[in-house]
Image (cartoon, rainbow, N blue to C red):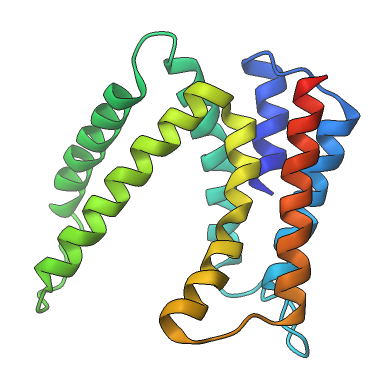
Length: 183
């Protein structure tokens, strides 16, 4: 749902033009993502964490639009620095009220995770700066496709038929969205 929320907010706040072909490609992207996460015989789990997920979708839509608006004043790298510094300071303040449990920490894994997250944030900001929040939010639906590919490589878990079909639908939706931008 994040691409749809982002697109609708972008038409109001950053001047994206509302078109039916864009709406159709975004809807197709959402359908593809749902097909990827569908498990035959199980379905789509909308219970575990669903309220948090729905809130996160709206917050991501707002953050993507706000990022696009901020690029009038800062570069993508500066925005990444500001976001991560603000997040670190906020977490430092929150840790006084919600202390982390004392557990053994694998610092190498955490540092590797942090470097990957930092790199991803820099790239996300660059994409939003270059192509816009809506384009990023529809492209991010490729994440389940990459998770499937990585699960084959690292875990030797092969995709289901629905994951393959969903991935093809997502890729088609991105191509259609990009074609709609060119016209």
